[in-house]
Amino acid sequence: NFMLTQPHSVSESPGKTVTFSCTRSSGSIATNYVQWYQQRPGSAPTTVIYEDDQRPSGVPDRFSGSIDSSSNSASLTISGLKTEDEADYYCQSYDSSGNGVFGGGTKLTVL
Amino acid sequence: QVQLVQSGSELKKPGASVKVSCKASGNTFTTYALNWVRQAPGQGLEWLGWIDTNTGRPTNAQAFTGRFVFSLDTSVRTTYLQISSLKAEDTAIYYCVRGIEWGQGTLVTVSS
Image (cartoon, rainbow over all chains, first blue to last red; front, top):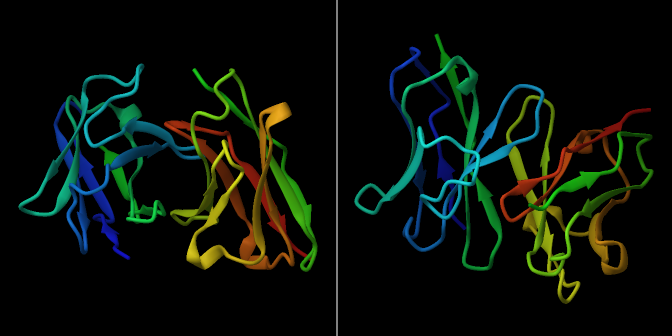
């Protein structure tokens, strides 16, 4: 099986752009779709990106996802940061058997 | 849009069992698989497994075999997670996930 590695924390100022990475340890990042979830304190996770780069209805277009085969990683980018974006962000993918794999999560602080 | 509504919080003693339910709204119940995820206090997300809502076939993550059982009742559009022989380390919020939708979570506390 593979692991998804995320940085533990990121800080950025309001109005700026931040990018989270999610690196797959083995196998190609392009093999299975990557999802991104936002979890605000005390709340259930919500999906902000699915199938690598698709945005659910209701998610602002400030959120975008991509994958990079050269670094074998997925990225979530949030532009025009707002204080309400402060949350934990998790990436997730599936292995070849359909088993889910989560990254450890990145805590975003907007200060 | 699918909504997932989970059952309420549970407080159980070590060794007991618990059954968490997840009811889906809408009439596309068998279109998507239903996944179960848990989050221990202050920790990240762990994928427990999923159930095929067409066939009822469950698939458990390797770390969650034996004590964790997934089932469903299509007549009421509800899936279930049953955990037996509860341990203190099973204390967590348990979420059901279908497509891009998440349930609100069910807190299971295991304490003597």
